[in-house]
Length: 348
Image 1 (spheres, one colour):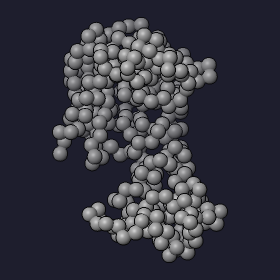
Image 2: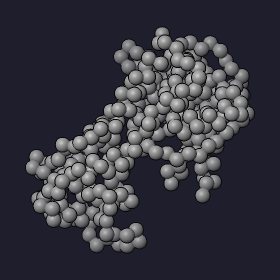
Image 3: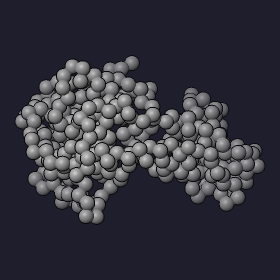
Image 4: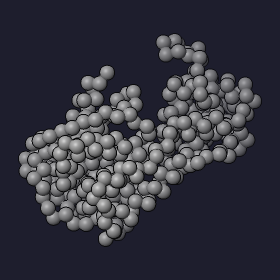
C-alpha cells in the first residue's frame, strides 16, 4: 500500500497552470519566414504529441489570426491542411479556397508549393525554444503516485456525492456538487460555482483543466456542510495512461475519497461486448487491474469505473452498482451533470 495522504485540503499546493494558449502562440511565432512546421512538431514542443489535435483546433480559431503566422503550419505529410484567410470577415464570401489562400502566403515567403504540398525535408522548422509545459505537468502527475492510496473501503455511506462540470462558450465552467441517498438515488443537496477555465482539453490532462474549478467548488461546499464520505468524479481515476486521472488528483489535493467514472476507455483492455448490466468486466493492462467496465442496462453504452483515492477497484465497483437508478451514469453524477448543464445555459 502507498503511504497515506493527509485528509486535509492540499489545494494550496496545486501547481501553477501554464497559459498553454500563449505558449503555443510563442512557438508559432518562432517559425521563420521561408519555413513551415507541423501540428505534431508544435505538440512535441509543448511536451506531448497528443496535443496535436488541440493545436489544429487552435489554429482554426479566427481570434488568433493576427497573432500568429498560421499559414506556416502544415500537416505531417506536407499537405497544407485547412486555413482561414485573415482578410475574410465572418459575414463575407471568401474570394479563394482556404488552400489557395494558404498557398499564396507561403509562395510569397519563398516556399515552393506543389499540388497543395510543401517539401518538409526542405522547409521544415522544429528547432523550438520551449519550456515543454506539458512535460512539466506530466512529471507532476507522475509524482503523485507516492500520495495515492488504493485500499479497501467496506463501508456503505447513507449519502454519496459527485462532481461534474459544464462549459460556457466564453471560457467559463459551471461545476456542480450533488449529493444523493445511496439507497434510492434521491437528490439531497446541491451546490454550484462558475469559474473561468484557463487550460484547453487535451487527452490525459483533464485534471489541469477541471481540478482548479473543482477545488473552489469543494471549498465552498466545506463552508456549508461536510464533504460526503465518497465523491464520484466525472472522469477517470487509475484507469489512465499515467495511473493518475482527474479522480486521483482531486482525491489527493482535496483530501477526499474518490471514484472515477469515465465515458471512454483511455487505456487497458476489456471485451466491451461481454459487458452486461449483470456482468461487469475487468479492465486490465497486462496483469494490472485498473478498473471495471459496467452498464446500467443492456441498452446503455459501457462506462468505466476506477479507484481515485482511498478506495480499491472492488469497492469502487460495488458502490457504483448501488447507484444505478435508470440512467447510464451513477445517480450522483447524473444529477451533477444535469444541474451543471442547466446552470450553464442560464448564464448570459
